[in-house]
Length: 228
Image (cartoon, rainbow, N blue to C red; front, side):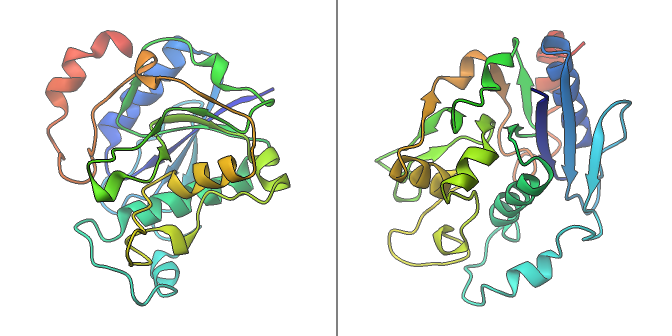
């Protein structure tokens, strides 16, 4: 099977470049696609890397998308998490068999070939924090995970559900973060999956496009052996 890796990019070209290089260093036969939602700093083209250009709304018109949720709660990043989730859902149309999803602020430490498994609906870390109301609902971390699109759709499971996104559809106990409604539905349908510690495979900078912009130079230097 083709080893498709998909990354949703938003204004972090230096980080995304290093992410791509780290993937290819450790799993050289991957086919990498960037879904570029940038409004200021688009992904800089790299040889052999496919780009789905949404920098001007060519694929998703986010204004039109948000208009369907008039009661949405304001956020510090203009509903960035909801846009991220919806972009991941759109990737299902381009990769109907499945793909490995990664964030743009992740560096790979070793071969990720075992994530490409058509026998399973998902592979990755499922996390929840019972001490925080906004993180109590388990979610499949989007930093590195396998999504079997064909199996999920055959069983009525999708990635994005606007009624289960706590910034789009506010309400008590509706704190669904990225990957939360997806893993909830996979479990309800009893789809086969594999939970593992992705920290064995990656290092993660975290929240790069939201509140830590411009802070990653030192982190990249510290971890340059992973992508050079």
